[in-house]
Length: 230
Image (cartoon, rainbow, N blue to C red; front, side):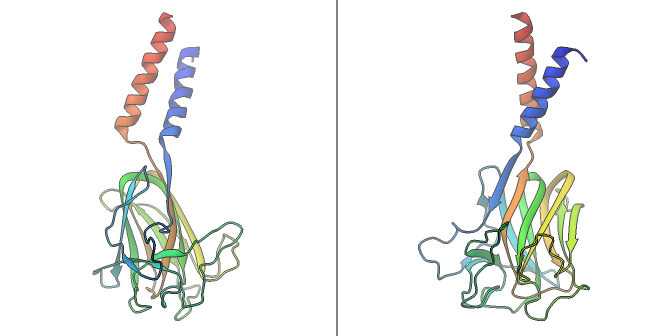
């Protein structure tokens, strides 16, 4: 491989890496000035600058349900009055989260996410799984990644009590999944369904669109020829 090809390969890899962007949704800014109220967040586009993400839920019969951004402990969602979202050395939950049970635990449901642009990985926190019944080793929960046609392209499954994050709070579970392809949808599926759960701190990496990568490649080729002519 000659020097020019090596330079192009390195520059291309660097450009691709810089084009990938990390995004995070913590729900802290969605309710402003009045943190006592819940706010409907069903199919609302959360713009992170690099992507646009929307959320909804489905009950165990597959019927779509609304989701809401709520404050911890108001009044009895994932955290009853007086409770606080857990934090630890590796996690800061803030004060707001997303849930379906706006009036307290009532419906068994799963969470779903849509991404306007493709992502390569996703991580998030789940609050209070099994708080009303206590999940066991037979009650795993799974984070699924799907392509644009809802075909599974990645997943991660864990069981309560086996939290690898080493955070000393049984009401907090961290999930993380990645894919070698591109995901446009995701879901948190509870094996037996659950009530009163919440999700928070949704983090992901947006992959560069093919058109953007092609433009970067053309620019690199142009620069290389300009250097050679000089």
